[in-house]
Image 1 (cartoon, rainbow, N blue to C red):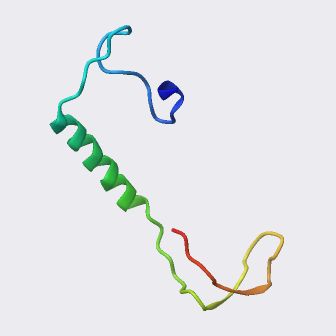
Image 2: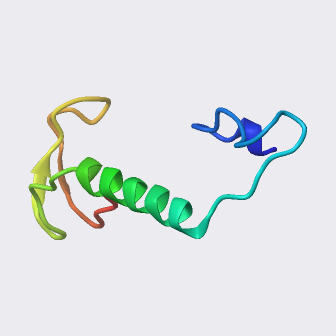
Image 3: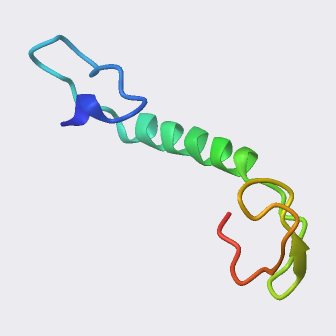
Length: 71
């Protein structure tokens, strides 16, 4: 189950006996993940309620109103 998680490449320790991580190691990993998430957030250049024109896809050149932003 865990090995099928995207980004998981293995366990710390031997193949048959994983070892627990120190809390400081867990905290360091979580901090690095949070930094990456903050860097990946896209910049949204419109607001809820704003009229926009669709640039591509099946609704190309159609106008629409932004109802929700889910970054």
